[in-house]
Length: 150
Figure 1: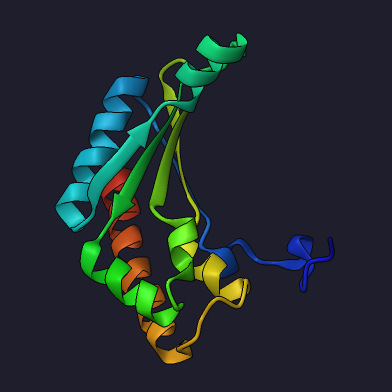
Figure 2: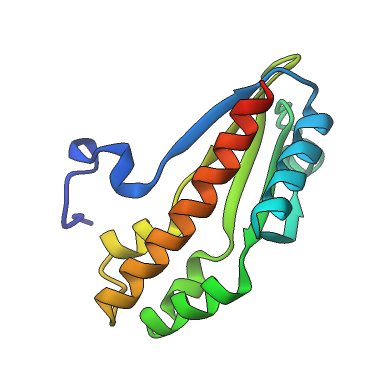
């Protein structure tokens, strides 16, 4: 399979990569990220621990790794319209928290809206651009608040 672009040539800003580190325990970080997401307008309808699942099912011995599936319903509704429903395959907007070492948690996010743009999913470019701007503002607010607490 050949991609229509060179992934190594992309600037992380093009796919909305964000990362910060929190100095706290894993469970505390999960609660903090959930709280901040909720405060800025995301709900968290889906969450799970891939590390627990993999450790149980295939004895993976993974360090704590957790996914909060964030969603702003009004923005998600607009994104579905702007992509003829196809962006649903990328839903929800995930905030991933993994323990890089005890007491240090990485919070990672990738913009599914920008990924949808790179994949050519937009049927309404202007509408998707507005969604990208709106979700970008929300995610930036999440990270600003997380970093301010550090």
